[in-house]
Amino acid sequence: MANEPEDRLRLLIERVERLEEEKKGIADDIRDVYAEAKAVGYDTKIMKQVVRLRRMLPADRREEAAILDSYKSALGLD
Image (cartoon, rainbow, N blue to C red):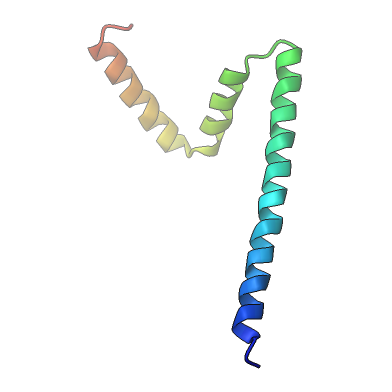
């Protein structure tokens, strides 16, 4: 069984390669969805921000909003 470590390494590398291909396919699908949204008039930059915010916990969103408000106020942006 001298090749066992090499076989395992090869299998792991092949799994990573397959997952990278899947990841590329998913990234292409996401890009297509944003292109479709843009074609019907949605602002994709804002959509991406909303997607990021939806992934956050409510407390984290509130904290981020409070810090942003504080920075904006300090710079006279309000």
